[in-house]
Image (cartoon, rainbow, N blue to C red; front, top):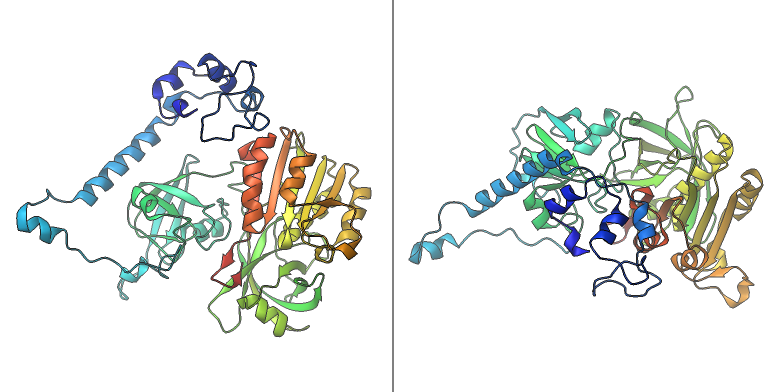
Amino acid sequence: MGKLIGAREWETLYHGWNWADVVKDMGFVRDDGNTMVAQPHLNLDPKKMWTLDHLRRCPPLAFPERHSQRDERRRARRFRRRLQQAGPRRPTGAGRLLSQLRWVRPAPFPGRTHAGADRHRRKAGDGRKKHHVRFEPVGIEIEVDEDKTILRAAAEQGIMLMHGCKEGQCAACKSFLLDGDDVEHDRYSTFALPDYEKEEGFTLLCRAHAYEDLTIELLNYDEEMIKSGLPIQEAAVEVISKEYVTHDLVHLVVKLLDPTSSLKFFPGQYVDFAVPDRQATRSFSMANTPGRNEGLLEFVIKIYPDGLFSTFLHEEVAIGDRLDITGPFGVFTLRDAPQSDLLFLGGGAGMAPILSLLRSMAERGIERKATFYYGARRRKDLCFEKELSALADILPSFRYVPALSEPDENDGWDGETGLITDVVRRLENDLGRADAYVCGPPPMVEAALELLPTLGVADKRIFYDKFTTTGDADEQ
């Protein structure tokens, strides 16, 4: 399929065609008339090869001029950057040797940049100003303070951009600078934004600060949600319950201290908890719904050894303590697609946002066919089983499928076994009509993102929340 990428001629020739017809016309179909010809570096298992049926679910080819202006601006930007990097004409002889001697910033620790790696260049006396940032192709424009990230400024103005960790690790908010160069980043992972991508003009909105007017191309956005953001609020809460539901998962319940206020959020979103006496926050998803026990917020939090918030929660937090939160954040929310089935795939503390979505479905009487696959190591790692079983009575088309990857002989387990993604592969063979929601530890999420398209789920219908870690021992 490499031949199909990057040639404007074929895109114009096949304007309006279905992808399956394009591939068939170009001869990339095997003798069976349905299975596509795979390149050597791809999986050659006939059962896993893409077929024309997969491609028929894709939208037809758009006329290339639709995005040609944006493509031209991208190319022009890359050309300008190459000129800037090349500098003046290279000297020869001794002058050339001297020109090659330059200061090199010390290498950061693996996968990271220095904290405030760019912004340290700003002088302390610089005044803070507002700049206009325009997002394409949606045509939305906002004002951004220099001391706020672009993502935070957008959220405060009701613009819900795609994002995940907000810490420069997951790359969910990665975008491209079409116009403007003066952008500086807080600390981020170079796995999420490699140096070569940054030099080309890519940026992470959750870490980017604008110091001039910008035009940014959103590489990942949801037109259904982008203007539906809720106001970001700061609130104080009181701990009313702290219960271990497994050996390493805590069910934390808090209530808002101001009885006249309420925290508006969509099921599946999260808030930031401030860590007392530390300039740090940690993010946790709500497990309840906005209409359930108004004024209360529920969380399912994984305890990590030596984790910053884990240690605080395990050793210090007590009933009656006050905590400070900010939110809501996140785009792991239920999309309105009544004709689509639902597949939920979770593990660990990924239980929280999925439980919130399921509770919301029960409250609203949503009867879409839904299956929740939840992976754990042993039976003692399962939680909320009674409630999930009871949901099957409320939601007639709901099925809960837990699986254990390392069942103990004494568990008496007769359910599914193996990695949860392997279980999905065994039990599902055609998910072409499904929306998939994935939430949990990064390895599980990555495996799911690789698996689900092979089972027919369209890439744009896979929604995920990856619980990245902060530092070596801290959790999100």
